[in-house]
Image (cartoon, rainbow, N blue to C red; front, side):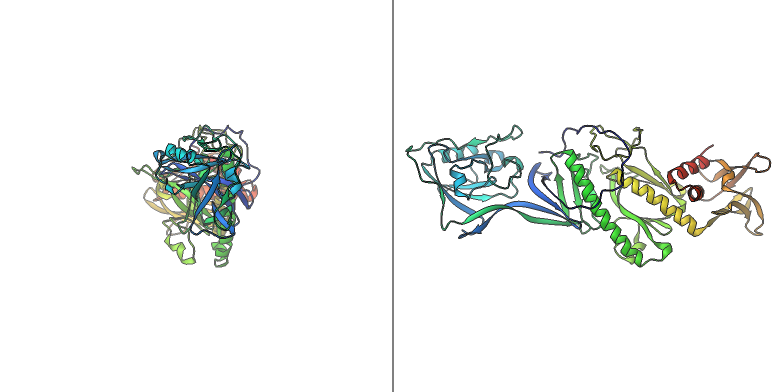
Amino acid sequence: MGTEGPPPPAASRGRQGCLLVPARTKTTIALLYDEESENAYDIRLKLTKEVLTIQKQDVVCVGGSHQGRNHRTVRLRRQPVGGLGLSIKGGSEHNVPVVISKIFKDQAADQTGMLFVGDAVLQVNGIHVENATHEEVVHLLRNAGDEVTITVEYLREAPAFLKLPLGSPGPSSDHSSGASSPLFDSGLHLNGNSSTTAPSSPSSPIAKDPRYEKRWLDTLSVPLSMARISRYKAGTEKLRWNAFEVLALDGVSSGILQFYTAQDGTDWLRAVSANIRELTLQNMKMANKCCSPSDQVVHMGWVNEKLQGADSSQTFRPKFLALKGPSFYVFSTPPVSTFDWVRAERTYHLCEVLFKVHKFWLTEDCWLQANLYLGLQDFDFEDQRPYCFSVVAGHGKSHVFNVELGSELAVWEKSFQRATFMEVQRTGSRTYMCSWQGEMLCFTVDFALGFTCFESQTKNVLWRFKFSQLKGSSDDGKTRVKLLFQNLDTKQIETKELEFQDLMAVLHCIHSFIAAKVASVDPGFMDSQSLARKYMYSS
């Protein structure tokens, strides 16, 4: 079974009622997909607050005398009606073992209590059949006489299409093998070449009647603290609409977890993400105990950064972002100690970066389902991934990031606004060196006073305007900016032209202070951001 498939039905759009679903404990039957073999294997997932556990089925001895190793030797007595009471699939011609795919209730195989769907047939009457074709094994079983001794071993990683019904914890009922299976399902519940049709005694196990059960056993535990999730096929932009991978901080991977429906995948993606988020909040609280009030962590988490101008098939790579105190950090791996904060790949001052949510873009696969949306109406964004945002820093340096869920994008937007607002109120003002007509000047953006320009040597104030007097601006995209202010007395527009070494940092600072000023009066952050852009980027 492949990871890609037909698209789920399109969903109506609207704004979510909550940003993240509460942490939860869940259990479900799913598949573990192997990209190399393109096979999927039955697994059971157990989600707790701190760990995602992957379980695989195995047959274990629960009583009696165990025969050793994982092999079981079982004697079957062919019945006049029902034969051996089992069906098989597979064979060497398909590069898979011959596996019991059905066991019919109350017939010979079922009566032994020692055979299970998913058992690989190793021997028939002492003849090794590990490398036999499907037809060879069928021939042996049908011509083995009234009493057949078979040796089997349960395959924990048998392709899911060999075992029916999918994920069954015990003997299966008589269901169709399903048209999706590429292998022939040979039923051996009919009479073979039996030498007699007289009633026979029930089939029985050899030795001292050991009792076996099929159980789910833990095979891998993925710690969720600082873990990340990926839904994209490695090295491509191909989205797995019903599958994802969980990667732990220590490098442990869940493998590709595939779900039967896109809705199941969506539910589990949100649940795992919520538990990761809860653990991240705990880590933030622990980190903040060691930080001063002015250097608190506001938000942090995994994102994917778009590679800029790189000739690579992998256009995104994982990054860990953090909003802490006055700074925005970009890491390759999460900081786990106080000393790790100095090893960030990039560090920017929050007041000098511009956060922007890209227009929401919906793929034709409609993978997000009914509850993965932000309610945005325009779908003309050119990026290949949805849920993108950009952070533009000084000197025009730009980063484009992508997250897995619309709820995560909403959290990042709110967190950037909150962190910037707190930093503006904390610092109060920022001053930049500038020049005009060869004269060195200072330009101050002050949360209380607005804009002030003064001579760098004499400190003589040349002009001052409130935030409300700024009516527009324009710039050359390099060093020069024109600020348009309205004189309170004459109502005339006055143009002030200045030149800065890092123009973008100054413009972003002005934007941050205007947004914070509006938000201090009107807590509607979204409105304050829109108003700030209106002032700053109108020509």
